[in-house]
Structures are given as C-alpha cells and as structure tokens.
Length: 274
Length: 324
Image (cartoon, rainbow over all chains, first blue to last red; front, side, top):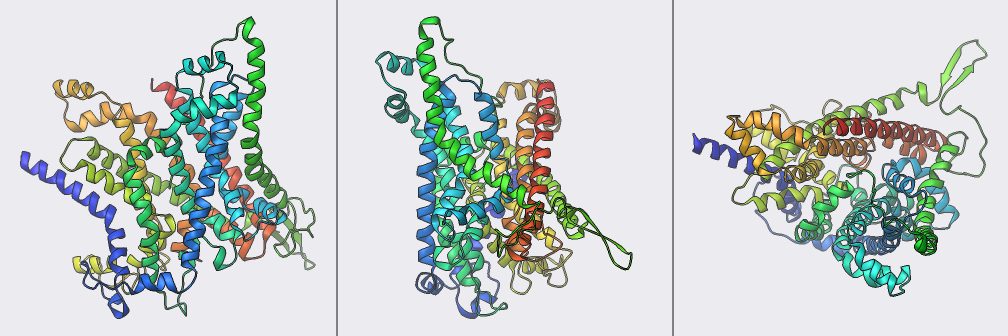
C-alpha cells in the first residue's frame, strides 16, 4: 500500500515536471534540425545542426531586435526603480494627507487593461514625436512597472526599523540624504526583486511594442518573433522561429532559476504575471 | 493588494516636532511628484483621451479631423428612406458580443482550471520529498517564457501536419485523424486554453504554495491525531486556512484573464471563435481604420474591468472579514 501510494505520488511529480518543461525542450530539439528533418516528429534529438542559429544572427534584424529589447528593459528598470524608491520613501515613512487614497489610486492603475490607454497613448506618443522609437516603449512601459515597483518597495521600506531614520534626522540629515545614504544600502533585496520583475515584464511586453513601432529596426524581440514569416504564408520557418525563441528564453530561464528565491516573494506581494 | 492598506504611521507628532513634520510632508510631495507625473502621463491622460475618442468619429489616418458624435459609436438608430429602421453601434454589434462571450468563457474556464491544478501542484510542492527543488525550478520555466514565445512553441506543437501533439494522440489511439487545433472553429478556444493553463498554473501554484507554507505543521498533526483522513484534512483544515490567499490569487488572475490579448493574437489570428475584447478593440483601432469605434470598445472594456475590480474587492473583503 505504501509503495503504491509513493509510486503514484512520484508519477504525479514526474508528470508535472515533464509537462512544465517539455515545450521548451521540444523547441530546443526543433531549433537544432534543418531542412526536411523539421517535418518529422522526433522525441529525442537526432540531428545537431546550428544552421538555424546562424541564420537568426546573420539574416534579418534579429541581433538589432535583441539589443533593442536589452536597452528598453534596462532603461525601464533604472527609471522605475529611481521613481519607485523616492515615492516609496514618501509613502512609507512620511505622514501626509491623502496618502491612503494615493496608494489605492496607484494600485488601481495596475488593474488597467492596457487597451484602455492604447488609443490615448498612441495620440500622445505621436504628439511627442516618439512614434517608432524605443523611447515610446520605455515611456509606455511605466504604466505596468511603476505601480508594482512602488507598492513592493513601499511595503519593504515600511518594515525597516524606524530607529535608524530617527538617528539620521537627529544628525540633521535631509530626506534626500536619508534615502540615498540610509535606506538605499538596506534595500538591496527589494531592489533586486522589483528590478527583475520589471525587467522580465519589459522584456516580454508585446502589445505596446507592436503598436508603437512600425519597422523591423525598431522592434523588440517578442514582436520580431511574432512577425517572423517565410516567403509565403504556407512557408512558416519553424526552425528559425524556434531558434529565436530559445535565444530569448534561455537568459530569462537562467535569471529566474538563479533568483527564484527572490522572485517568488515579489510575485506574492505584487501579484504580477509574466 | 495582498495586504490591503498600509496603515503604519510614524510616531505621533508632538508639539515640538510639528515643524519637522510639516517640512517632511512638503518633501513627501516633492518625492512623489516625478512618479505621479509619469503615472498621470501614461495612465490618467491617455485614459481620458481614449474615452473622448469613443465619442468622436476620429480615424487613424487623420486624428485631428474629428467631430463629436455623442453615443453614435455605442448605439444609434438610423431611419432609412424606405422607412426601415436600422440599429447601429457597439451595443448591437454581434462581433463585439461574440468577443465579450469569448473573453468571459476564456476567463472562467482558464481561472477555474488554473486554480484547481495550481492547488494540486502547490500541495505536491508543500510535501517533503527528494528532488523538490528540481520540481520547483521546473514549474518556473513556463512562467519565465515570454507569452509570445510560448504561443509560438505551442503553435508548432499543435501544428496539424507536423505537430507533436497530434502524433502523441494518434499513437495513443485517442484520435483517428490529425486535428488543426488552432484553425478549427471547435478547437481554437481549446488550444488557447491549453497554452494559457500551461503558462499560468505555475503562477497560481506559487501563490498558493506561499499560503500553504504559512500554515503551522501542528494543525495538520492534530487533525491527523483526531483521525481525519488526508481528504478531510484538506477540505476541513487546509482549504479554509488558505482561502483568503486563494481569493486574492483568483481575483488577480481573473482580472488578468479579462485583459487577454497577446496569446490569442499570436496563437489564433483572425479567428472569430477566440477573439477577445482586447483583440477586437485593437483590430478596430489599428487594422480596420475605425479608431473611434475601437476607442469606444476600449472604453467599454475599461468599464467592465473597473466594475469587476470593485465587485471582486468588495466580495473578497467581505469573505476575508468573515473568514477570520
């Protein structure tokens, strides 16, 4: 009886692992195939050809798209952390009128459907002359990174002991000094969590990137992959799409696995979906 | 949202410190200003403009040349010369209502499945066994993969001619002919659901796992000593204890599911059976040159989601209060 139960349990565990990992594994196998081998279903890697990867990096704009994604995501992380830290200090440590209303408002922005702002953002971005530039993306991504950055950081700052700040006030430190010299050094873990989540969010974003850029050179990776197509409608280059998919996913998977202990608490606090 | 309301205050100001407090309140607004300005620019103002565009006849080609048309995008009555009366607008557009129905169906089924499967995965991860770390890492993989990439990976696996899923099902004898999963009207929504459930169950599992780990072990020990079987322990002890966290997770996921765009847009393009409200709105805005009509649809989507948010928060809070 015990053995049956244990066996059933491990069968369930095995099923979870296989289902979770198989699509990624299959994408890797496919990306290593070339020519007609693609049209034969294989469960194990039989061929090993890097030709799809060579094509991804030499034909078309994919390397440029990778750099675009990297630039946009890094800029989004830096800007939202900067805005988030100063705001979190004020929201967590300073008592002023309208604070709870403000927190609720910020939180409600994270519930906005992106479509509700798409038309207005499009007009604004065109008026600012940002259309078809990476700055349009950096700007618009603030709508989803700022609310949870502010929220998570506020929760974190609130839980820091008040004594350290009081000591700094007695020493005559200004709020700016308190933020940069007292709090910032203590906020490492929270900054890593929120920074990572903001990075992943910006790296994966599709709707704004699709709408606010119009040529291949300005696109980010998700849009580039979605729009990758062959010479005709019936000739989808699956090998190349899978190679590109693997390239954008591997860094993320590594990042998430390395920092999993940091990401999970952030998820619970911010309720962010990838 | 997880812990609604941050209610900690700094020490109550005494007479001698009020000067300092005023100064701090001033600096608070200074520190908040950049963040608030950015949020107003990316969220507040665009939302207003979207709502406004919904009341005009703006077109993508020339946004400036627009006129106020009132509720015409939502509902209008046209009297034909022949005397026939024609109703027009979103509220009588069958394609819009189809999109609403698709979205609701998708949200309800996906969130239900993800909650049940997420609970099972969380219970597995919460028990002690060899290799738990590997399983935990493995379920993070679907979450880490960008939505567009997972849509493409699955599109390939679901391919009618060369897809591995048809191959597996044929080998197992579950189907007799190959199925065009993403193109068939009957299976397109199933394909979308499969991919979404695969991708999002880990997120639910992690939220539920966090709640499970807060339960002290003794509670389960006591229940077992009292002779409860594992099934009873789950329904009578574990579930009530994790219900508040479960509610929060379901609300988050539910609201998220109502906004779905990426997966459907890429996995099943131009498919009336899966078109969600977001896809409908964007199509009209940028592909059909019906900018104003799309804005009106976006506004309706916002109203629907706003009402749902308020409803969920209200229900959630009542349950949270009653559960303690």
